[in-house]
Length: 231
Image (cartoon, rainbow, N blue to C red; front, side, top):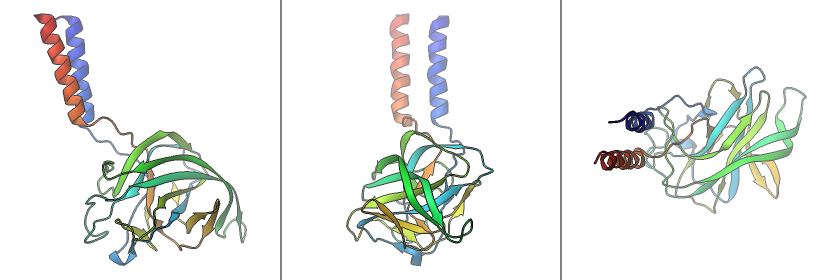
């Protein structure tokens, strides 16, 4: 094998090794709750408001996800797949009111849509242990220290084939606070009213890479090419 062929083989092997290794992705929160928190209400865009802590570093999200609760025992057993398709969106809150100032609930008055994607039954699960969301990749989206964001899903008319959590309290990853309250988007305006802990969508730093099977075909093709050149 020539030096050039050796470099090609090493590159293919490195790709395969990388594809099988998981890394610790950071999301906004880890969902918790009981079966009584699981609902299948639809016909709205619903989500929760979170904040990137002022003393935290900027964070870059690369994917958005929709919650995958176990059909028979929500929150008690692991994800078992979803049946519907849902658009998940991430908004940055540009201006807001707060009564009383500094400590009261944050009420958005203007916002910017940063990214969205549609999660389907074929969307993959996050790679972190216990990750209960199915994700799709989005363009790299930076959230800066102190930013308020809403992460939510557009739900078709219910009852939905899949459940999400209402009135539950999440465990946030380091650097995030919230959700202070649940929000619905109607007529281009965010309304508070779902109560605390609307756990339906998430954002993650994880970058999805091609499935191992696809990479295996790439490697086989590369090895076949080396064999033809040797011949």
